[in-house]
Image (cartoon, rainbow, N blue to C red; front, side, top):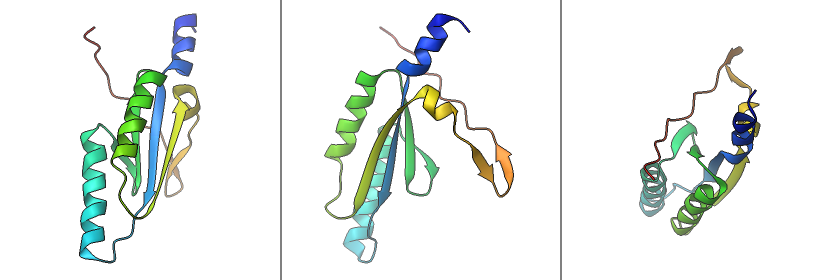
Length: 113
């Protein structure tokens, strides 16, 4: 493995957002839906229900998206934010029923400058 590729495994980051938001009233349902829509507008994709992930080119880029998620937090509920390296994320083991699945490949991100 080339050194640059190995270095990228530790430079590229994944931001995971876990949430458990109350949905007992109409106001809480709207707040939960708004939070979900806003994080999806920021590039997060659903990994599982209430777990969203975003691929980031660097730790600095990950910090920007973490800051955005913090600015979008609803009034009630629990939200967790976890930032891990691409190397750590690649060690994930996924199963559909009892059949092992490969994780989805990260999005191809173009850098213009």
